[in-house]
Length: 372
Image (cartoon, rainbow, N blue to C red):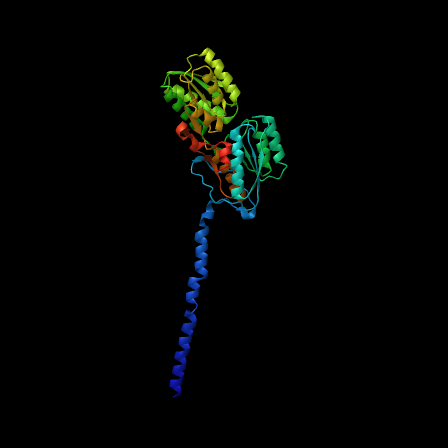
């Protein structure tokens, strides 16, 4: 009887040990280990973030993959980790295209939760004013600077000084000299110049005389576009004779250059500008000479004077370079850098040939962008 009791007791004890050993197994498998695995799975993409990350206060000073041109940049949903202050310095306070840049930057600041400080020289493309602005922002406690340089080489020193203080610099629209910038956001100006040449060359049927209106010498955008137009003309349109004259992006200078050229080349067949409103000035000169049906005119950018000239039949086409995206993406590059994220070094915006029928779709004049 006692032996039977011991047997029962031994069996019951064994059962309790088995249950005690097995019971925790289910919670262990479904709680802590699963949470750890889920965390690892959801944070794995952090490998693409600059190390250390923004949590430690590190700022990304130079973008990655310089040889990779990023055409599908998409900052949708991007937010600042804290309320950064970002300065944007453009080339002019009078040219509509630069007002459009400031509007787009302000909208990006609102979307991303940062303060935007706008700067623009009173005199268009004034290097001394821009230099003073760059020196000023260095004392204002800004976290990042967006710059459209009036002269690509002249800004190298002031930009280097900002970078030395730990303030990243993004080039908006126009690339500056040196290699210490964070990112460049804009079109490939060589590609843009090639497209301009191909478009005007075809519209001139590959023959005749062409006037190229240069922008401001020393600005990468103008220099590269003019260089590419000439190269493509030499390559693909040997029947076209061309010359280029500085018009400094300006309506009045474009008008004067066109008037003078019509005197020396009364059989002028085409005019192209590489930016600003020089093409619109040239169109006025051509119209005044009664030669609008003879001279094919191409412009650059989609601002209100260009929209009006296209709709009036004074110009045959213009080039959209994604002005809104250039400024908006520049703010995004700053925010990503200040968050400690990896930032593309070369962010490209689209190049589109625009005619009168679709000009409203691409209109980037200030009045339109304020409503976007």
